[in-house]
Image (cartoon, rainbow, N blue to C red; front, side, top):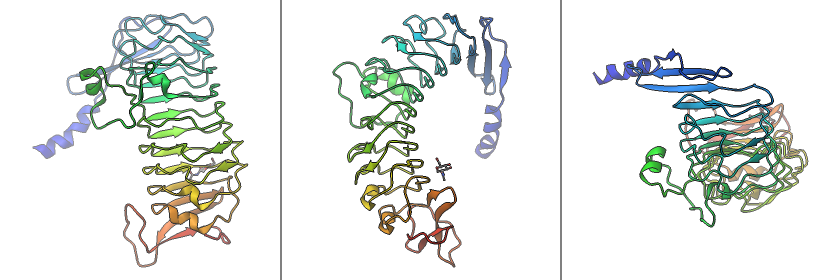
Length: 348
Ligand SMILES: *[C@@H]1O[C@H](CO)[C@@H](O)[C@H](O)[C@H]1NC(C)=O
């Protein structure tokens, strides 16, 4: 019986029915998707994108969970814009590709279920302290704006200290509703690519798993820049056109990091072996168009889990087992693994 249920359950959940939406604004496209055997679970998606200049806040259906306001030439977000009925239930909000340069400090406070916020491709130089305070935001995209610096005061009230680590093992909403004092933040993914950052922002104390700082004018990566970011799994530092130096031990502390993208850093031409120390879980390293080969062979001793290194568009190294080993192994590379490169002449 249990086995039968297991077989049936995925197909029942996949039953999706679309229905008419009441109170859909004529300029928007609304859709309700119901899931489950008795349509027990539904999501209302509202797409008000591409309306052109002269956007005015409009009513949206009650219980809207996804709202798309991209491509509307919006220049500022006022307190009233996101506060009507319907907005309070939003789980995701897309404000990308507008011309937003100002966000009122209380603009987001009513969005207490908001998990995903896309503010990419706007003209933001800053956001007020505490403007995300109390929101269960997990995924924030601020790429392609004009931030010169970035700090975690966005998520806190004035004077509040961030906890050094946050226990994410509990269900997010339960944690929030049973304990309104829970400080958060819960953010797992932060994209700050293509801004004006000249140093790595201090992000310790949040349970971040994915971070992109691609395309910022950062000149140096310093020891301690990623201190206490033990939850980070994916770090992208690609296309940093001004980057000349990565100090030894810069990545120490990133003990769960699996992917490190250091590609397209044209001014970075040396890399000391100590740069990679502490990266004990790293599986993929991308140095394409960054560092002149050959690399110091000992660099790879620092990364026992490494499976793949990209050194250039046509230069790739990967871990293989020595002949006679056919079964796959998971986890740390064993002593009889060898790093093989597809270009002759690379000294590893
Ligand atoms: C490495 O980076 C280059 C340039 O950004 C990209 O084209 C390539 O797909 C990356 N390779 C891997 C294996 O991720």
